[in-house]
Every structure is written in structure tokens, then in C-alpha cells.
Image (tube, rainbow, N blue to C red):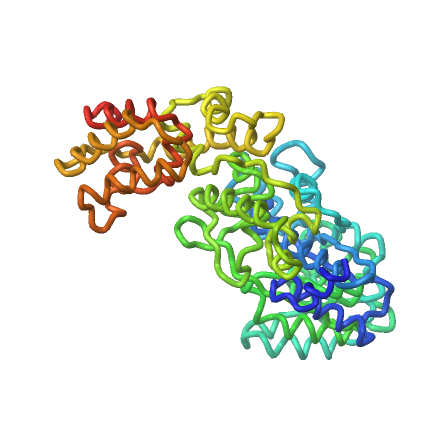
Length: 525
């Protein structure tokens, strides 16, 4: 363990770099409690999306990295801003018209359009927790509604009254002149309508902890800031939450980065120590647009898990967090296969290499063995040419290729086989376009079929790959990738594919010869 801790203290893997910053914070005496507190925030204005998962997954990776280099206890809070007013009706909910009358009410006061929970906020919180529980995250869930109404936020709200002018000075510098005229750090919740009000504050009474304002109809009200009668605007809420909870670390997307100095300064005005931050790049959909909870664009967590394992998604989240990521269907097969490549490499690596390996961070050091003896991309091609509609058909080929494999001994491969059939049917099959070979390609493929029929040597991946390679060389394909491209387009209906020798080894020599013959006769399309 000491060897790994030494490696982790020098690792350039981003979770360890962030963990070392937190350790310096603790050693410098900036932490006024006996643990390091990580926080992730969630705005439940719509259904949780995959970016929300990514934030918790990445924060957990830093938490585990910190625990590897330190014996200081840690906690992770997932804080839901469910007291926020519903500013618009999401596009992806049933009967959206029925929600319009509840605009500007706190999300926990809006009826659940799905009819399952006491409010829309409770529904979205439950969805978030279900998603996080699916991945086995260790976290504490905090609801802003409960936090404000229970009085847990009262102390920082009263302090904000006392230091109102100082906080307003920070905020007004960041606002346009027109917005400055009506802005307040406090948002009162109307005692009668229950709506979150964006109105100017006429008076702040620090001695009594009260604010006075006119509602939209011109009627004057005085309310205590405590007990859930008032919430912070979202920018002050960041800093106030950090101060109230004693947050040591929070990450958020690039769209928040310009506000970081505001959050930090408000936290300090309210008596807290600004936390460490990490800004990640945004997630994009297939069209390159930012994914949005209200639009429901981009992949959802459930959609990813229909076609691949939880670990493959965590692997995708680990990679280059400061680079924008497309969340579309075509990233899944590559993520699955690269994850298993890293699993296979891990046991033979040095502590330094293991500290940099994504699978250490995905599994918190408790790294399982991979039993994926067939890559996911190969399973997709096998599903294509075999017409498999169930895993038993795929296993017939797999067990001939790898006699020691079985669904029981290779559970991740068995799971991947089921994923591959679904993925093939939904995404690969509709996109397949077969073509006829030209004269040169046809001659080469007839030659390949003849050599395969005559082959009586080893039938392993490398031997068969060399055979395919030799045919392409003898038929003078230059560059040689044109030969493999022709095989993929004529026989598999795609412009790229697996190592063809490995595919033959898996599918079988006789079956591959028949596939070539069918392709030459134009029967595959």
C-alpha cells in the first residue's frame, strides 16, 4: 500500500492531482472539521441526465484518490436545489399543459406529471437517487426544501441579512445596469400563491432577520428570512451553501466558471473558506449542442445502460474531463472495449501505471478481472453475420472459439452479448449498406475463400490475420487498408470493422467462406 501511496502522490492522473490539492488544504488548516466534504449540486428542473451522473462519478473518483493518499475521513453530499421555482415547463414530461399554472412555484410544490410522487421535485430527486444507487455511489442526499424549511440554513440567512450590502456589492458588479435596479440576493416565497418571487427588496432588517417587499400586485409584505420563507438567488446560494456546510470541494461545468469568483467571495463574506474547484467541459449531443435536462437531448443514463455496462460509462467519464464530450450512440462500443483493455492490462502494471489506469479510479482500487475474451465490436459483427436474436446463438460461436469460456465463467462477456444484440438491432442494422465488389476485389475475395478452404494449419487470430494480409499484398492493394475496407463493405455492410483474421477465427472458417460466397453473389444486401 505504501508503494501505491508513493505512486499516487506523484501521479499525473487528474483525480490524484485534485486529491493532492485537497490534502494541502487540510494540512494548511483551512478545514475546520475532522473530515473533507465533497459536494455535487443538482437542479431538478428536469429529469436527471447523464451529465449529472458524470459530475458525481468524477467527484467520487477524486474522493477515492484522496482516500488513497490520506487517512482523513471524507463525506459526499448530493445537494438538490428543489426549492427553486419552475421557470419553464420541460418538453419531455407527460401532459405539459397541466403544469403551466404552477410556473414559478418551488419544484417541490409542483404536482408530479408522472403521478408517482408528491411533487415534480420529489420525482426528479427520486430519479437521481435511483440512478446514483445503480452505480453504487456512497453519498448523502440533501434537499434544499428540507434544508431551508427545517431551519438548517437559518444561521447563514441571518448572517446574509447582516452583511447584505457587502454581498450586494459583489453581485451588482456582475450585472447589467437594468438588472441592478431590481436585483436582490433574496427571493421571497409568496405566503399566498406559493410562488418564488423575483422582486426588488424594499428593506432588509438585520436586527429582526426580516425583509420587506411588494409582490407583483403591489401589496407590501414583511417576512422572516428564516424557516423556508425566503431562498437565495442561485449565485449567492452557491456561496452560502459552501459556507453553511463547510464544503471543501465542488466541481461544475464550464458554464459556471466565470461565476467562480462570485461564489468564492460570497462564501468568504458569510464566514466560510472557499472550496477547491474543478471545472469540466460540457457534454454535447450528436449534433454538438449542449445537453439539457429540459430538452432531454443526448443520451440518458437508462439509454446507455440498455446497451452497455455501468463501468463502461464510468470509463467514458474518466477520460479527459476538460475536453468537451459527445454523448451519442456511437461512442458506446469503443468505451466498452477500451475499458476491458485497461482491465486486462492492470494486473501486470507497476504502481505508477496502476495509479494512471482509469480502472483504478472507476473501482476505487478494487479492480476486477476482465473475462471478455471477445471484444464488443466483434460481438456486433458476429450478431450481424449470424443473424443472432439471442445470446445462446452467439455463445455457440464463442465457445467454439474459446472452449473454456461459458456464461457462468465469463459473466461480463455474457452480459455484453445481450447488449451487443440490442445495439446491433437498434443502431448497426439500420445503417448497413452492402455493395458489390469490383473486379480486383472479387478476384482477391475468391482467392481468400480458396485459401481458407485449403487451410489446415492453426486457426488462431494471428495466423488467419496473416493469411488475409497476404492475400491483400499479393493482389496489390495499396494502401492495404483498401483491401480490408472492401471486405467490410462487401461482407459486413460497413466501412470499418474488426481485425478480419480474428473475425474469421470467431465466426468459423467454413462459415466465413460461405459468407464470402454469398457476398460475391450479392445475397447479403
